[in-house]
Image (cartoon, rainbow, N blue to C red; front, side, top):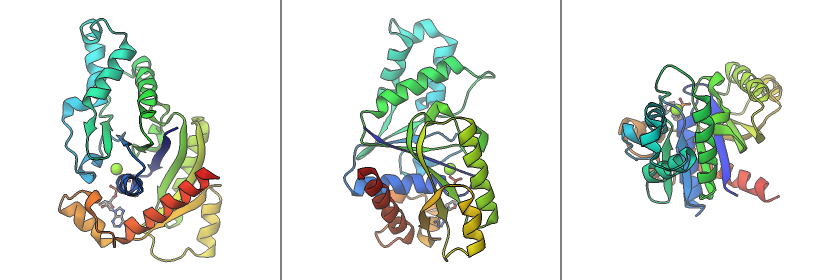
Length: 257
Ligand SMILES: Nc1ncnc2c1ncn2[C@@H]1O[C@H](COP(=O)(O)OP(=O)(O)O)[C@@H](O)[C@H]1O
Ligand SMILES: [Mg+2]
């Protein structure tokens, strides 16, 4: 079974950074191939992973083709077969990992039927990998069954302050109300350099989620972003990388138990 990890959290809390670092740490531990899923239309996960993805390579684009001209598009295949072939062909391949970009919901309507089809295809494709990392869209309301169906670990990134704790609580409530099939959900405190005060600890405890990782503020992450360099190239002394590696060790250890 692929180890399926989804990342949620408010915009700017470090979802994409964490997603890229998770890929890096899994690859380092020879847990591969990894499938990275960029489920945020405003995201830059491909950049953080040093991969170029054409606009026509997105799932949103495939969905639009299929919607506009279902007969020609499918060419005698069932829609599900066709999508699976397309995803397999269009997935961006890199060393040790592949990347799928969800892209925008093109067109005015919500195509639940097609979205369900896509989700099922993605779930089947995910089984070809040893780990799957899903970088979610920021807006909490977008946490979706579309991409998060049957997730083993949900990581909620948040800033180490009261706002972070309150937002994490809201995300937890949304996850519950959407009935996402998540086996376990944890908090990841990002850009956190000191220990939490007892009052803040209590606030985070209200979420019912355990803090599984704490990532320090790392100037190397900022610098690599500015230079548009892949986070896969961060030097081993990067504090953020080391913290994520400890967290990955922790998650794998729990998985074995
Ligand atoms: N631990 C960290 N140390 C330094 N900068 C960070 C860290 N985590 C994230 N950042 C920076 O914060 C900004 C937002 O991070 P990002 O991962 O894009 O958040 P999100 O995907 O949740 O919107 C980016 O500029 C990123 O480089
Ligand atoms: Mg992002």
